[in-house]
Length: 238
Image 1: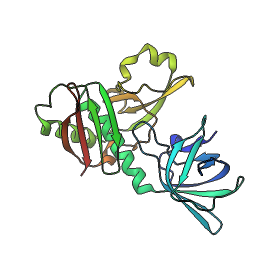
Image 2: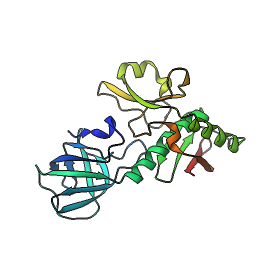
Image 3: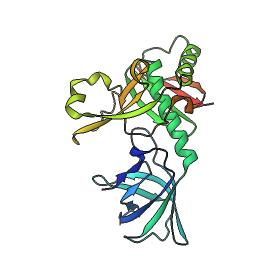
Image 4: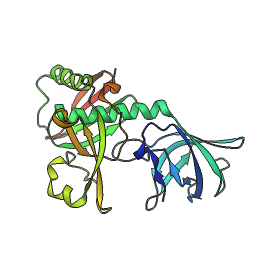
């Protein structure tokens, strides 16, 4: 298995790792990694591996077999052998933008408290699809409400809940299209705000900012019709 260090500290930007294997497709597997693998609408991380005088550009990161995380090279190139100690260097600017967008989307689901049917995260913008039969009446009011939440500088933390507890309280699952993965005994929750200031709590395996003010100002993009009972809301980093 690969130890997912991004879950312990989403702000790690470079760290050592040891190569434990290669995939038939040419991917690299490490004993531990700060690279987030594609999942939950968040893209896999990119960056670089360095060993000795050699470097390998990583285009993306994906989930492998079991608990393995696979770093995918940008192009065919010599790879570090099994047992090699490497330095992992994250494309931090890109990852941090993913973190800002991801946290903003959680707040968007607070501003529009309707079931979420899909979503996607990018470095410049993100979107959520809502079970909604008509466009919101006041788009500007929603944008203002979202930015007001961001400006409250709410703390963002994570916690864990047992599979049984999650099944007993399905109301915290906002996404209709994808259920949180169960079967490992516990599911990660991301909480925005604490105590009386808590505004959101939902299952999520992605990376987030530490406080909402770090998101920066958000503006709304298009609100598109994607089916009879579906509206797509796009937000953009300002």
